[in-house]
Image (tube, rainbow, N blue to C red):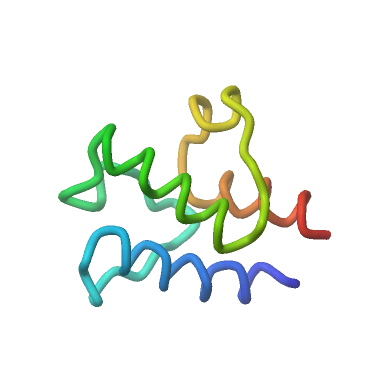
Amino acid sequence: MNKEEVYERLNNVFRDVFDDESIVVKPETTSKDIEDWDSLEHINLIVAVENEFGIKFNMGEVTTMKNVEEMVDIILSRVG
């Protein structure tokens, strides 16, 4: 799996979680860029991403991710 494939799948996850078909995530995307991305939706997003890719983030990763690029890097390190 490459970065492009991860972003494509993440776009679908983000659109589903936030119920917004116009979302296109980029490496620099953060919670400030998506109106409904609050702490509760962050948990829903993390669970949805974990389910999509068959991985589990650890608490340190969840609390320190600064943007989507960091999420992608973690996903790629887990799915190899």
